Length: 463
Image (cartoon, rainbow, N blue to C red; front, side, top):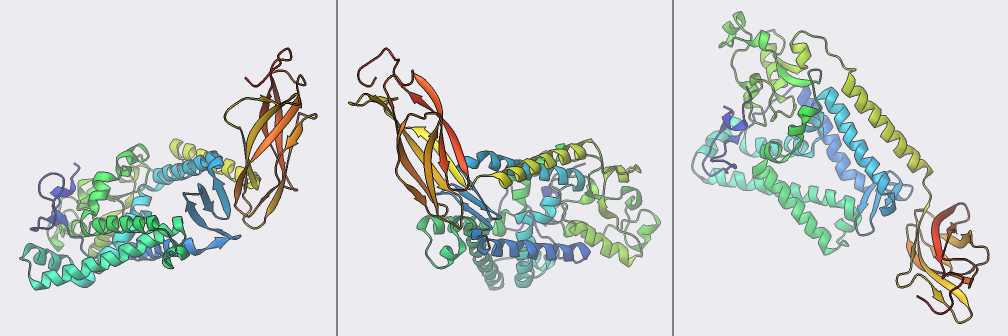
């Protein structure tokens, strides 16, 4: 049976606390829990938060470690610059992220949701510690919220929400630092749109932390819905040992029947408001809070935990197979995509060149009898450290007159210049292919183009 969060005994419906999409919302009060997994959560959470705060400030080879420059259409990643012309590389990056998610989910279940998702990290490292500090643990919060709006309740809510607001702004600044640059943001040199986006992010985070919370995972996040296609009986999930736990009893005498003593602590600590004893549920994010709770209770009885990381195969007495069809397929796809991406990045040119015909006419016939084609050559210097001077020449039209201005670009700058190519009338017929070559002194990039001319029997002006 799958129990929804509104059925859970860990939630109550306090007056004025908010409403869900259907009827009154059952507010979830996750009880504080300690244990080995929570210590690991805290350590990994602080590492992830440190990465969020520090990475926008770091630079490799003069480039940001991570920067998404939307106006310039550039992505800086680990010392590499991806531009609009690197669309295929960006597709490979997206596929790399997707196949990584597929591979690790097929092996370790909802590893992302329970350990790395920003929603989980923020709730575990910001929201719940603040609530514990300001409002107390679960029972106190429930009693206070079920009562009237007293001064005690008002000032505690005000302090809690104020702390949420401050932290939401700080997180918004950290996130926008990956787009606008942290130094510009913190010194006031960023644009109005950057600070407007910080405000939007902060408001969204505040609304999530103060009200939406688990509903984001249940109603908005699609991952829970398609994880069923990524996992199978051999994927690691948080599960309840039915064989040892049932039938449930009360107190220590329960160990004479099933080992579950119906303490409901696993339900009280669940941030999603579910009962893991009801079996696999889409709402479960594999955060392991219920594992620590059961380990604590069963440890006092000298028994192993009834809730643990396991697989359906193990629960049914079968051997868990880590190497199987889907894991091999995901691993192979991951290796291929990673290999292609690394090869492309390692061999990419330090300049980017595009050639387009000047709009208006295909060709013009000058008064001296020459046929003229005009092109627009755009060159981008992708070298973050050096200024480059470029020479433009043609390969395939040896008799052509070439008119192009000098081209010198600062690091990461780009410029579009006209390229005029002239040939005597009758030298070529209709369409002739050639290459526009751009040489920076160490490498030559060739871009194919075509020269248009009238038929050799035709004379006169431009078409």
